[in-house]
Length: 322
Ligand SMILES: [Zn+2]
Image 1 (cartoon, rainbow, N blue to C red):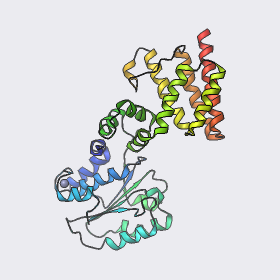
Image 2 (cartoon, rainbow, N blue to C red):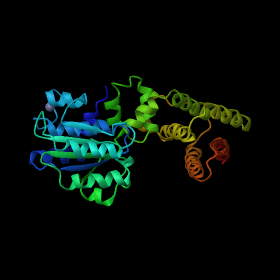
Image 3 (cartoon, protein in one colour):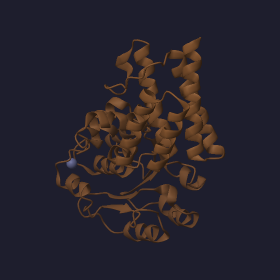
């Protein structure tokens, strides 16, 4: 099981709500910004924090357990279809917010994926955000604040969940992700969110791409091999961005190793890559950045991968001679 509480428990967002609860001034509407695909788990923890009788969400009491299983009559989750927030969802909130709470003294409405809520649904929600009935709290989670109307934003208290550090992610996810090396790779190639890390960890394709990136560095010595590797990468049909990230992580590891700081490496097992020195590794990192930029403009992934491998090989030869 992933320990989401340990991730979110230390954030300013959690501490703000905790403080609001302690002083009896819970906001009637919070807007939680996080690009994490697991944002619902964090919002659930916030709901427990608000509704649990204990100062911190205990996870043991009836209310905490009901919220965990999404069966608490006083805590409703949206969107109902799991993908985008519809006007029906908002209608449901407006209707239910006038019903008295059953378990405690609060009714909490959790809207995940707020970024998918269209303007008319947002306008409908405005009045409730402005003057909610007593004891009603709305938590909107959104990947970004910008898809939300300024009128919605101004009626909510904004909280942010920034990306997590690698150590924190490792500690929280290692229960669910027993393969430590694989987890470290996923964290290093991810974006600091639990969602992306879990996605990469579970992605067989990504595991192969990552292994391929290691082989590229260890084995690629001639132009002929560039063509061989780029067709292998193309055959994986993976997102070129994933390959760039996998390669970048390995190159960074080689670089810190080269500089005598192996403790900074993301993976314990570094690939043996002969012939790369600090200059050619830095050059390779620059080329990856350039490949990412080029990807944004024209985006032929297969051609870019080939270009990148040639550029890395060229840099390696160039810096070997000098
Ligand atoms: Zn509790």
